Image 1 (tube, rainbow, N blue to C red):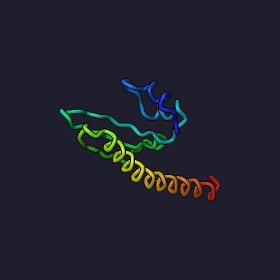
Image 2: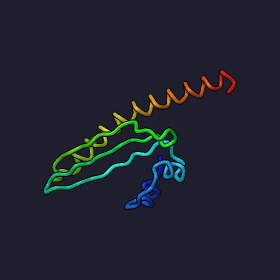
Image 3: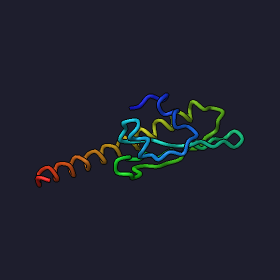
Image 4: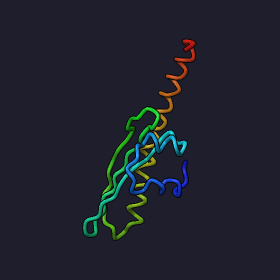
Amino acid sequence: MIACNSCFTYKSRSTDVKQVGRELGARYVLEGGKRKAGNRVRITGQLIDVLAGVHLWADRFEGAIDDVFDLQNRVTASVVGAVASKLEQAEIERARTKSCVHQDGK
């Protein structure tokens, strides 16, 4: 996990996600955005494995801004649920690949 303050360095900057991962020492980056129209808000997010350069997960969330805390809780629950399984799968695959390379002596 990286502190939010570290991430604000990249706000409003066009930056390569692999570079961000290297600079922050993070294997995974969750990036996203928000749009507002009237009293509605749409939040998008995507999880990226910065070493492999692949997207592991992406989704969008919509709701009324009148109860922003409820929307925040729904987004958090959805992200954690989706991300946890994707990260687990990715780490198992990474360990399996690493193990196979190690067993072959390469």
